[in-house]
Figure 1 (cartoon, rainbow, N blue to C red):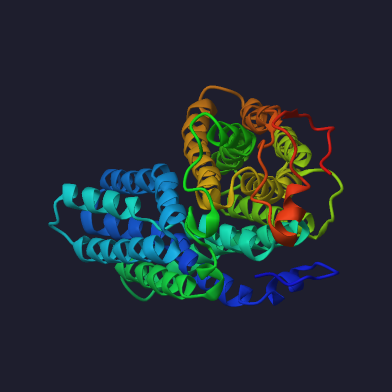
Figure 2 (cartoon, rainbow, N blue to C red; figure 1 turned 90 degrees about the horizontal axis):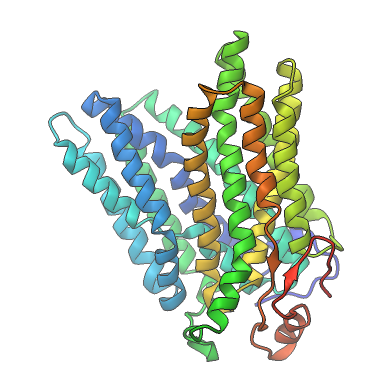
Length: 431
């Protein structure tokens, strides 16, 4: 399901048959993730009058969503999107509606917490599945790089527009309306996504001659080692990026700049990330993905360390924007490496491991930097946050020892880029 294109571009990606329909449906479903957190937090806070209860509910919701993500992705790999993804989405939507109904005075706190935990456990992995569909649609690596870039930028915009949408809702209605809207978005988006012909082409592991499972100690070990670099870098970037929020708040507080300036600095980070993602996707890189990944991770780290030396708001905005230029390219490249590191029947869970790493890193980064800000000078805190991403850049890359199944033009094109499983330094190249 691909179209040979001589001049790859972002427009070329969306001209591939069924790409626009499938991508649009996935974005509708993923918009739910941009709206649900704020809507749920406001709903629980208003119904219980307790920030502690709201924090507990959101912690359980986030923990089950993040840490069970690889397991949910494995269900999609094994059974296919229609048999696994749609039931997950419908159950998730139903539990969100139950939560919305339960967010009223007098509801026991345990009911809210347990329901939120169950809802998080059912979160459908729409992002990893969409990236697996892109890989199925676009065997050409240049086109796939562009697809992952536009996917990453679009996802970032969803997480900016989602809270704004909830803000508009709570101005005229109860925040539980935002929770119900999140349920409707994920149900409608997933239904449209799984009924797309492009998604139907994503066969379960074992279908069409694919291996049902890796041999013990064989491919599994090779895939695990190949995934180490992108997963560690994703986690490191997550730690560093999440630290920015609190560090910028502390920076503004030290200088009496006011909370309004924080939004501008964080917006600069998002703008930089979006620009960096689009530029990265448009460049026809001559260096291999595993050589670029350490460069992007180190760029995030060095720019954040430099941000700690900013004498004023203007230079801080510039430094944070420069750090953002490397964020989306780092994550996009990590997803590309994850895709090429595993057999086709394991793409969804490979992407989910990177997703889990980013989210876990962001949670850990927020917790750790909160402790450091109270004990260390702010420039040192910026340097520590940047050092995490820079240290992740030192993780060596490994390539999987076995190519994707060879067969036809697609198999021949892909197998030519696979080498033996050896450590790959940042100066090596793929051919």
